[in-house]
Length: 99
Image 1: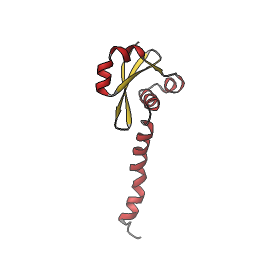
Image 2: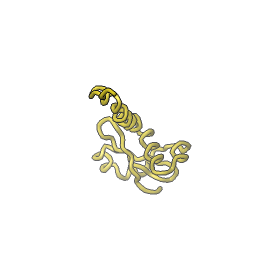
Image 3: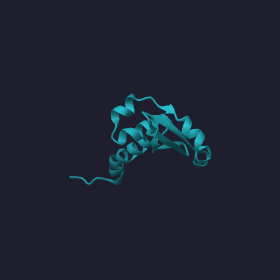
Image 4: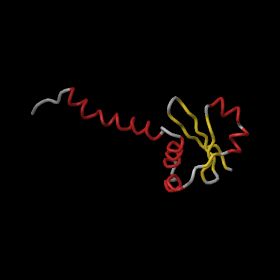
């Protein structure tokens, strides 16, 4: 029985490390995909797939200064509001409250 080399070990484990990193960047590459990913992983898969995302004009106008400082924008999804912050070239979604 031959011994496994470091090169073979790295080749075996590189997909385990690289695939989740690539998926993270793909699932946070645009505001709509980031919002749907957030809703999906918070336990609402049907809502994440079937609902329409709308601009939340009320919060975007009312919290204009806060959103400008945070590099964020509010979106509405089935009477629930979410804030999407842009960090570098990815978007991060958080719950912002009910309509």
